[in-house]
Length: 271
Ligand SMILES: [Zn+2]
Image (cartoon, rainbow, N blue to C red; front, side, top):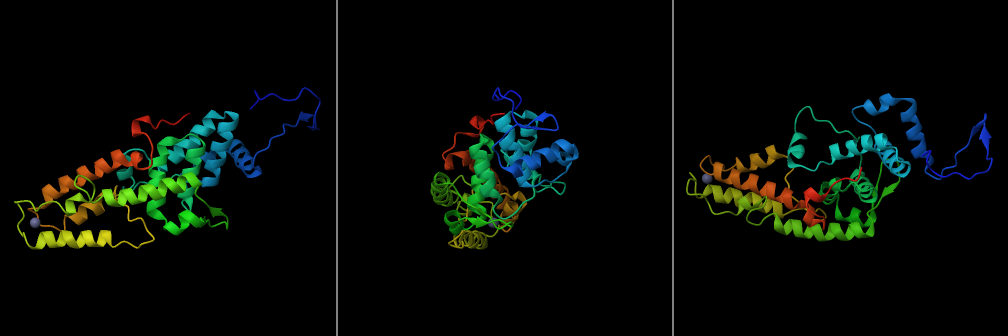
């Protein structure tokens, strides 16, 4: 920020030091100064989203590259861009880098959108439509501090379109839940019961609360997805498991396109 042009006139001074006038949120500067005075804050395992947001906003604006990178690292850790990292979230030693709260996906989405962190967008959109009822997409969601999180009009349009398309796609052959309607494998030991079980599971996935998107394009919990397949007989399982894994991977690969984003490989963060 020292490179920013300053007026060439004697300005206000405090204890002999020139005062630099800024026009940012005072809360953002409070967070930044706290980090400068106490660097251990950034070594804490989990920090508040408001701190991450402050470092991204001020880091971008004033070219505080190290602080910006540290904040973006937190965001990309919690909003990953590979399926392997999604699976890593299920491990016992995994912990979030940013403290969660109701409405955090709204804030992560707008932060990524406004500050050129595109790798975060697909999963932020996905969790947005998956985690919150549609009423909140229109009306916003109250955060614990009493303020409201809202979707930008453009993001609302993207979410509505994607939610509809995802729900229809996920049941198709080759996608995450396509195995539920696949032909029964010849190796099945119980050709009457297994298809009935799969039909039952399919019904549960379809009979979703109308306020929720019911998005399962990427089943986040691999163990949960595997446990569904394991409700079929051991003769069915290898084939259905293969279909489920392949469908889940395909859903992940195509996830950005559902939100009108370029492929994963092109979602490079500008740092
Ligand atoms: Zn079977």
